[in-house]
Length: 116
Image (cartoon, rainbow, N blue to C red; front, top):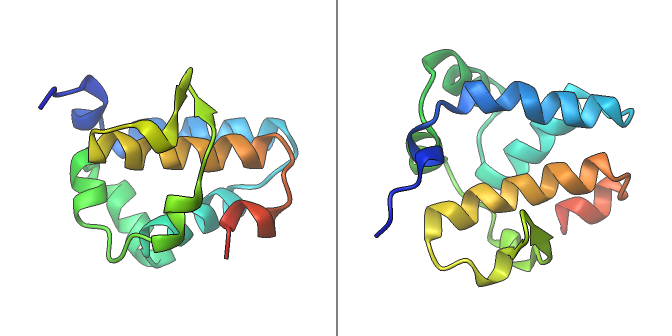
């Protein structure tokens, strides 16, 4: 298994970039948080605790209460790679999150992003 640099990167280091990307397009931090909670099963308090702890991406996803099974319906290209074809499980989870934030920033309807 290839260890990617992002696996050991602190989630709280990347989180502000997610928020900034969304806010530049008129979206809110609350919407970013809702997508993260939808994907991972964290409560808002749990998400904030993860941010305070400074856990890396690997730990952030490992400690996620329940990954949403609907995430498997996330399709498309992020960083030039189709998310549904990524073989490394942790990298796929990270790219699912990236894709959700990207869709939010592109103005996709919130209800459609969550794929409920």
